[in-house]
Length: 179
Image (cartoon, rainbow, N blue to C red; front, side):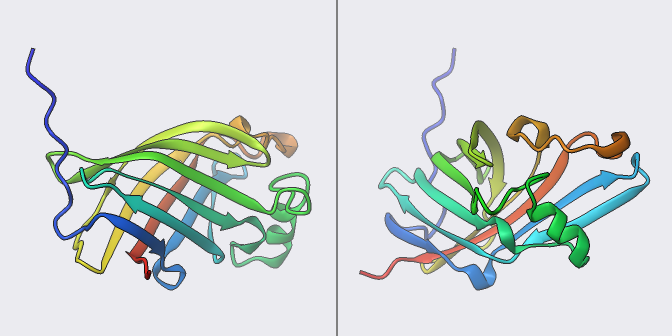
C-alpha cells in the first residue's frame, strides 16, 4: 500500500495568524421551496472569522455568521427566517463553522473537516475547497456544499413545501493577521 502523500502547502500561504476579510467574503444559500417549483436564493451579510496556518501547511479556524444578517431580497421571508421557525436569532445569534483541520492535498484542493453549529445543534461537516490565487498576503477558500436543514432543527415545513438539501456557496477571503 503506498504511503499517503505529504501535505502540500498552498503556494505563498505562510504559517501564522490569518483573519477573515468580511468585505471580500460571501456566504450564499439556495433552497428549493413550493414543492420544488421555486428556488430561494440569498446570503448572509455579517461574517467574521480567523485561522491559524501551521508550518506543515495545515490550518484550523472559525467562520462566524450573523444569523440575523440573512438576506434573500424579500423582507417578509427574511423576517420569517430569523424567527423561531428557522434560525431563531433571538436565542441563537450566530451560525458557526469550526474547521478543526484544513489540509492542502496534492491536487491543490483543501480538504476541510470540522463542525457546523446552527440553532445550538452541532454536526460534523467535511468538504473540499479550492484556493485559487493564493498570495503572501491573502487567500480565498471557495467551496460548494449541501446540508440538510433538518439535521440542525430547521424543520418548519408548512404543507410539505420545503424538503431536501440547502446548497451553500462560501468564498472566504483571509488576510495575514497583524501582530
